[in-house]
Image 1 (tube, one colour):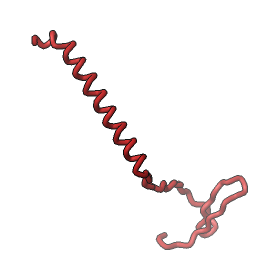
Image 2 (tube, rainbow, N blue to C red):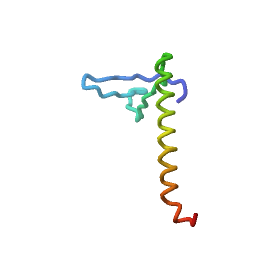
Image 3 (cartoon, one colour):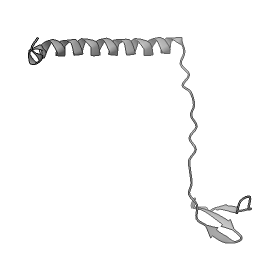
Image 4 (cartoon, one colour):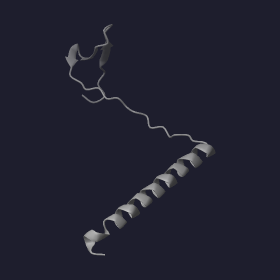
Length: 76
């Protein structure tokens, strides 16, 4: 059935039907998503990097406090 001519019919209610030699065929629909890149200007990049730096510093501070609280557990 490669390269065969088919007829695609869309009804008023939105239902789609594919016909081959007058007979309806079963089919699956796929939605192709387009992947677009995000365009950020210089200020946006700086803000994004600053956010990552702040998040990293916050995580490091939290981890060091938790380590100092839990030192008794490992015998230090």
